[in-house]
Amino acid sequence: MVAGAPRIFVSHLAGTAVFDPNGDQVGRVRDLVAMLRVGRRPPRVLGMVVEVIGRRRIFLPMTRVTGVESGQVITTGVLNVRRFEQRPTERLVLGELLDRRVRMVDGGDEVTVLDVAMRQLPARREWEIDKVFVRRGGGGALRRKGETLTVDWSAVTGFSLEETGQGAESLLATFERMRPADVANALHHLSPKRRAEVAAALHDDRLADVLEELPEDDQIEILGKLKAERAADVLEAMDPDDAADLLSELPEDDKERLLRLMRPDDAADVRRLMSYEERTAGGLMTTEPIVLRPDATVADALARVRQQDLPPALAAQVYVCRPPDETPTGKYLGTVHFQRLLRDPPFTLVSAVVDTDLEPLSPDTPLRTVTSHLAAYNLVAAPVVDDGGSLLGAVTVDDVLDHLLPDDWREAEFEPDGNGHGLAHGAQRRRGPAGGGAHGA
Image 1 (cartoon, rainbow, N blue to C red):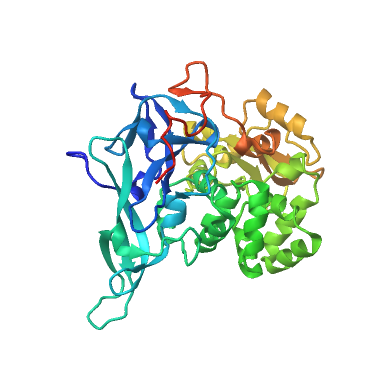
Image 2: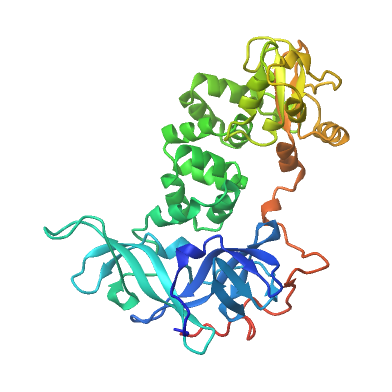
């Protein structure tokens, strides 16, 4: 190990910021790439998978890493922005080595890999994985169940190239610090088998948040591998508009079976949304905006806005309606924007500060008109009202963007701006002489 350089457990690197020599952030670490070697020789760490602007994942060779310290990675400043593609002989450390069941060489006990540690080789910019942090289950009278220990790489065996006996506990612990969109991006880049394992282990609410951020094909794949009862629970936890979009892509029989398994109220909201054309206000809207009665106060409105799990676009305004309080409501009276709530005394009735100047959208308003409406009036959300004057829901700017962007926007090519920010299009291959050396063991 390089003098003074600590051993680094790779789970601590997940989400770590990557900087160029000037101190500008160029991305975040999402995984490490290692190459297993024959016998019990420690694997070489070839590089890092770094997520840059646009959720694009590129390969950062370890030869271009000048420092890994204080929760940050420092690079030489020149990165090849070609999209990362995993080779058959390579393994993603976080995605494929953690949670694997292996055996101790001495005694043959089965253990679970919780983490691995890497070290830098002396006088070189090469790194290898030399330690494994494992948990050993019960089995002996003198052994505590769940005992953990750190051993040399050579002390364990069973790191085959096949995905066998792998759970998701350690990877889930890594995901806890990540936003749903980032977890979704990580899932998207896992193998289908590993993706299913992680999805099965996520809590329903967390999985619902992640599904909303995944491409359509991944959503259908994951939902199809869940038991029907759990799939219905996850759909209930999703925003109704996202659940409706997902269900509309399923075969009719599967869609009806899941709707019958959902709670009647949740299923009714989803069915109502599915009755509208996709690229209209009715097809885009959520049925769960903040609805208040005219006799509610500003203090009541602010309490609703402060709810932690409320999306920012929905928290930007409240809708004042006559009872009932849930969509579809009684008569829609108008909107109170967040800034107005901050300017008036807490005891003020919302009916006294309601904005009635802007016309609400009708459910058949086309997407282009919805977009123009939000842009013209600098709105992040707008109410959708039927011909009878009842509030049906609200269209938010994030849902509009999802439908304006191309279907493959999550995989869109990243083009750095004119300043480069330390990124450069390289004419070289992903691994060239300057990009990490040969693949030989």
